[in-house]
Length: 418
Image (cartoon, rainbow, N blue to C red; front, side, top):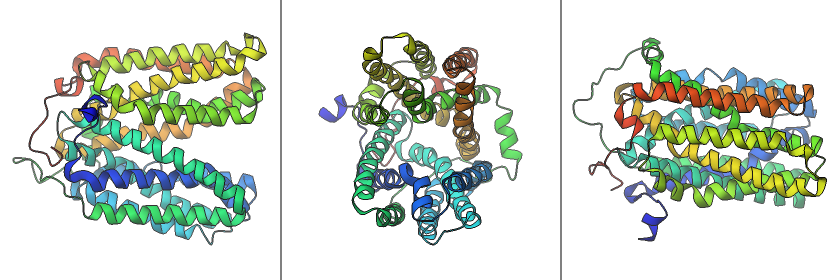
């Protein structure tokens, strides 16, 4: 079957989830590339205040995943995602009257908290829908759908803003709110399988569950490795545009083309790659990703030494190498984390895991720009060392992880997607 060769999972009754994932990504793709510019052009805020307000809101929401883990364990991932999608729909509508820094921070905080809750609940919901043995393909499908939606949304957003100016910014915000409202409606009708028999009804309260996760040293090793991977993965989105334009003196459109290359490769090839990885240990795949990332970063560091006519094509090739590492990483990391977590407190485990993503997102821009201001080669050397540390962490952690976390188990026929 074509779907099998492409690595697609059997969707079955989970079609509302698939459609909601695509709609969510499309709406986010409409707004995210122009988020700072929206508050500048439509909200009337100085550009620096717009960026500062969003940064403060996101940093204030950094602990939210810890709350999200408790919520997911108690009420379930479906209810958490429905509530977070509804909150984001309201939040983006509240962006419309924002014209002051204080109101931007307040509404931005609401949206950021809802976003953090969503990303704790999302892998837990995928785990429930897919069941053991199918989770790798499901995570690959959701990644491909998100890249497809973000790419299309970004393209449509550029057209809207260029055609209708300030009105376009308002339309993008309303469209993103509508996308979250649509997701809420779709997920309300999503059937989820019951919890397995014998699962305890009582879960640890308060911080006790988090301490149980932190006591799991092999899992914390995975989280620390993912912190390094997360910073590396952010490099293309944050660092490469700056490096391409400011250091290599290449045209700005090339940075946009590199992002298009990145999203297109993932959208087209992610599921097929995961199908080919199913026979291999997830930990070994992450080690391979670290090596490929290190190679890509060292190639980036040596780019200024090339003749200028060769720099543009070389950067395109290196971005492709970098994207292969991303595809290897995202192809296994979520499934590894979900399989390593006990089902009773899976939400707490995912909360600690999501903290690594949140921290990486917050740290990467400042780290890259600070190192670049010191030496043009410094960010790439630092990123190379980070991914090599992640490699070492996976080598040390692998023998202590459970077998179902390291290797793909056989599919469970009792899930709703079969």
